[in-house]
Amino acid sequence: MHPIDLGAGLLRHLPAETAHRATIKLVGMLGPLLPEPAPDDFCLAVNAFGLDFPNPVGLAAGFDKNAQVPDGMARFGFGFVECGTVTPKPQAGNPRPRLFRLVKDDAVINRMGFNNDGSTAAAKNLRARRGKAIVGINIGANKDSSDRVGDYAWCFSELAPLADYVTVNVSSPNTPGLRGLQNKDELTKLLGIMTNARAQLYDSAPQTHGMRKPILLKIAPDLDLQALDEIADVVRASGIEGLIVSNTTVARPPLKSRHAEEAGGLSGRPLFEPSTRVLAEMHKRLGGAVTLVGVGGICSGFDAYAKIRAGASLVQLYTALAYHGPGLVDRIKNELLACLKRDGFARVSDAVGVP
Ligand SMILES: Cc1cc2nc3c(=O)[nH]c(=O)nc-3n(C[C@H](O)[C@H](O)[C@H](O)COP(=O)(O)O)c2cc1C
Image (cartoon, rainbow, N blue to C red; front, side, top):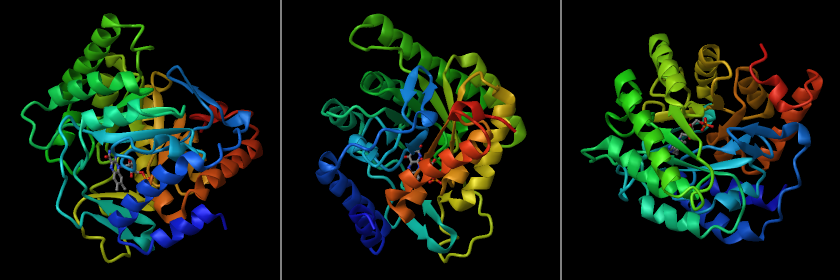
């Protein structure tokens, strides 16, 4: 067993949030000492929204909320790392306990509530990076904000120049009212303000701010077909580059663990089926108009492959990492390669959305 996986095994005996904090500390200390991961097989390379990803397997938002360890996490073989959610002002989040392992279900329920150190702290961490991993920054609004759309614009202006892409998160179930931003009118306004903020940033200083940063929208899995129609229309008209499907669910499929009734968002294995269904629905509606990122319940390369066949060019995971440790990333990539080979695809991109 790899010593890192052994360490991850020991951490699983600590309360969930304590284990998470210890992991961030350990990766901060040891990450730079870990060897660079072996180069990925060229079959796994993906070009999406102007970026060259070495492989399609990313770390989902919520693990590294303050952008403390993106390059350390990339050493475990991730093709990209999404940090955040970051809000303009620091906020403590909900009272503890707010993170629950549902071991018998390979799942987690969280109601963290966007605990983070605020956008200035995240910017400082991103500026101090020495690594070269592809890093996305996921942005949101403060719980007590009187101008939620203004919060996104603020975070965009402060953080977009320091990241490779920006995710607009309107799907956390743990900030009351936030998911209302997925409604047609509110979403049209929000994405309009995002693309304007991008145009202003770029026009004001194209050299310093580098390329026009891709914007992705992250949606919930708990949306009916009419809501999906409307979101697809807004996304297509908005000029953004991608859609992440999905965040955690407020639904409660049958679960075996004792924490099943806790309030919050459910992630992990039980989310795989509903989030993949929404992904396939959005692929039907958007075709190749924007890049789709599939997330929710990925525990193996077979799961990642299923998301890709459902329309995802890239995938992300979080919960399975907490259960299986960082060795999971290599396992997923190897299983994914085997699936591609078995079905006669030369590259990941050839399998995207193939029924
Ligand atoms: C503890 C925890 C915290 C999370 N925090 C965020 C967050 O801040 N922003 C966000 O967009 N998603 C957040 N997520 C959702 C994940 O990014 C992902 O969409 C979801 O967990 C489904 O993937 P998984 O089943 O692989 O975990 C969080 C998930 C967990 C388990």
